[in-house]
Image (cartoon, rainbow, N blue to C red; front, top):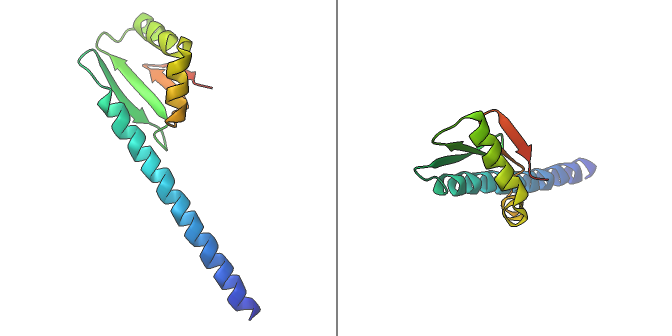
Length: 102
């Protein structure tokens, strides 16, 4: 009986783990689709990272100064930062420049 209860407990834990993994994977897919939808002719954006939680932006004229200005504008806009964090993004990156949203 003890072994049966252990197996049932492990089965339930495995089921909840699978559900959590599915939610995490779906959220990552949603972030990837959302980032792609923000792309324009001037700026391309994609979600990168293990769980697509980094917003990678690439301006058409990608030079270090443009990236600094672009990231600075994003980080200084509190409303935008809150929106990005609500959607699950933890950082924004342009070229080699990366900034945390928290």
